[in-house]
Length: 248
Image 1: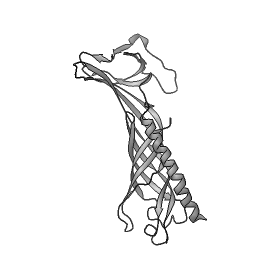
Image 2: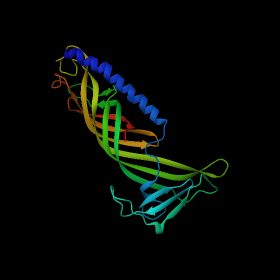
Image 3: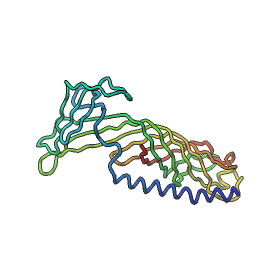
Image 4: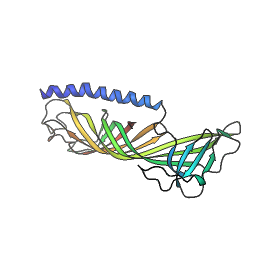
């Protein structure tokens, strides 16, 4: 029963999960980033002075910055309205400003990760492996997003406003995947080949540039059937390429 059950899970569940994550990720790339530049508390760098915590009030072609040094997460925002700074950021300028405006903020990150490529170092006489079966995992970590407003010259001689965004996260992931189990990877204990189910855990670093999210994952696999003690990759580290889809 177990020999039949695991291939059914691997051949039906994992392709459906992988396809769903892949097409959902592609759709998300065409939409606005969840981490858009909007009103709120940021650490702002607007001149040669050190960065300072401010509340940003958005206008169509301007930003109003209110110092908010005493703000803490979960507390009411207390603003110093007597020292407001207004930044003009029109769509076009005749001459570019002398510096870039930078705003950053921390947040909690909850993502779905797909890991299409997994590199396994050689072990037990087996050479290095590059596995290409899709894996799915849930990622939880700490994130920081950075927004930069600058102006770039156009062919007609003026300067047009651009908003660039990137973010980075570090955290833990856990999920499930599929792996090929046969005689070569079990020390001759399995005389046939099947797709085994693995539990994967590890740490990942993710970078988001505008709407594109990718990163590196360092993980460990745990085969979930009776051959787990014979499987040469049980709890052995691997390095993978990860793509993320944000959930929060």
